[in-house]
Image (cartoon, helix red, strand yellow):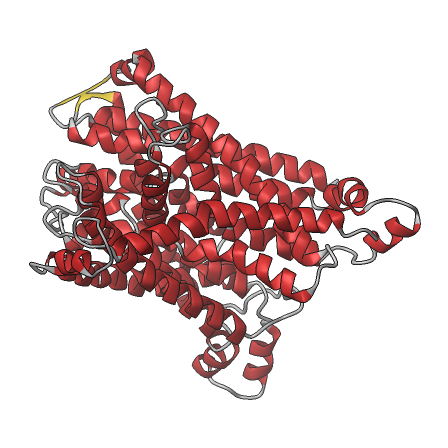
Length: 540
């Protein structure tokens, strides 16, 4: 069988990663080692960055807020996964808990912060209902709450997916052998899930640590490293040298977290297939606790999303509460806002197509290409390394490399930035799907006179349609909600909704912000529903 096709896929992925990931990130690292004025080699930029203690304080603040969020989200994600998989609660309740827990993934993180302000601020929805403000939302409290809303869906999905593979028959055997309920729970459920729970904590920590949206809306005077990076790069007096240093400071912990996640994956208890369904034993106390944690999660999500859905449909929150469509009409009557809506759709579609193709090419080269082991390892590492590069770091890298080039401030650059930002998860999804298909199809095709490419197009691709659709949906949704990278690469004519939301914040146009956020939510819900429908049809 000719290796021309697999090597072509290898070359495509390697070139894309080298040009649009390795080169830009390398430029950031080199720029941080130049003098304070950007001339010659030296540590002047590092000295300037840490001078005065602002960066040190921002790093400590970020570690504290992200650590608190991860310490809440990981146990809560486990409890929610347990409630939806191991309780005797009604099916509709468990489905509702799952849906509402993952719903925040369909909105940008900057919207969570504004929703917290309008729900828990001095004139917020909850504050007005209670008659008093629960806590000060600006600073550590608001950041932690916003981060928990952001990272909880990821922690929940990681643990729930792992829980599906835990054989619960061991728990029945443990009880029959005389173990106490707590001992049986600890040895047959908690111990196999120790790796996924630790991975959920690490993932939650670094998602929160590198997030820009929540600090931009409720950070207040509590400076984080992401907020400081934005100020240095796009503030009134930009300093690219210091900005590069801050970017490296954000990148290094993320690389450590990525490597730690890979180590945790290797240490996990592995199962060959999902566990057989086993009805949970009756336990009223367990079900009541599961119902309580499920209701708490649903209540938090419902409060924030009801706020987002309510505010743009009243005249002037909270002083004139008469219903109106004025704000919605104003958004669609504004040519500039209509432009960013169109840009977002084009960028999301372009990202979904390009990222799906790139992830598929990388997975084909590593799983079904027949390439040497060294080439497979290289392309696999190249495809997964994007998982340790924070969006803000990648955005700054693109800003430094492509400013003044024909790509500068174009939708093509936004699509390329998003594609390299999201590549890791789609590649792993496609790799897992291709590994489950018959490994002898290519050999059979070769014996019948087909080329590798013909076999891929006519046999492998039709059988991988479900995974391709899932990857497309993942990339589309993430491209619609991402904010950290695009704020550095989008221009005035190529602004997308999330970058426009940050701009509208400066003019206190919160009604427009919530209308645009609702539009993102509706588009993502429709895209998700259509992709699920297409997946069902592909399965029949």
